[in-house]
Length: 266
Image (cartoon, rainbow, N blue to C red; front, side, top):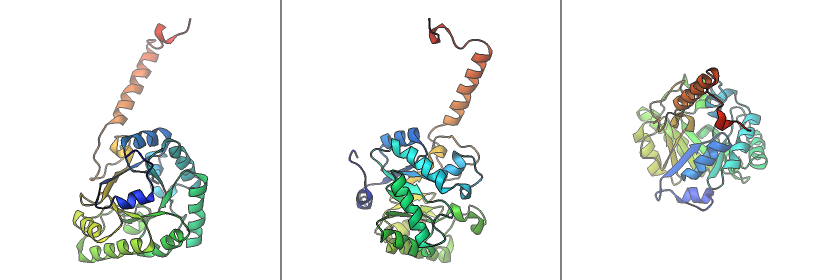
């Protein structure tokens, strides 16, 4: 896909082509994610943990998210750029949500925002969409609610859990979201939701039957070793490669092997 991806491109991919979404938090990660062919680049609030070293996603601020979205936007040329709205930036009221969403669309290259919540956030999603803000939804395991959930727990198990998920999914769609992330839910539930909705579903820890998939890039690359969820597949071990390179540099500087003549000017 060489043409610039837009919101209509994403919606049209439903039942036609699997959607690939990657997270990116700076210029180089967005640049390489864009070159990979991924249709969506998400500046996720996961950067709080995997880049900034916070204990969870709740600590990150709007200003920090704006800074990293601007950086990622410089490397995102073809993919559709989505920015996570951080905890507390949209929960007070739809007006608050719109004011902060406007900052992402005006002050960064972001083309959409993502926010967590189903039925409870439907009015906010509708308020944003009615005012020309494209919204990606996010239901199931919503990390910003981990205190309320009692931890990072799989959501939607059992008939009651499935019913709640379906209500959330329908509410997000009816409110006008163009797609929805399904996180940390049983594969069967994700399949049922995907078959019922007319908008694309993007799974993370939600099995094979979603319309697309996303992973946190730092997990995928082996750059974050604090914990690894079951749903993560590591496609590289760049963290180990970095550590080995740094150790070699340390040893060569310490032993006087670097710099050599080839690295020195006459």
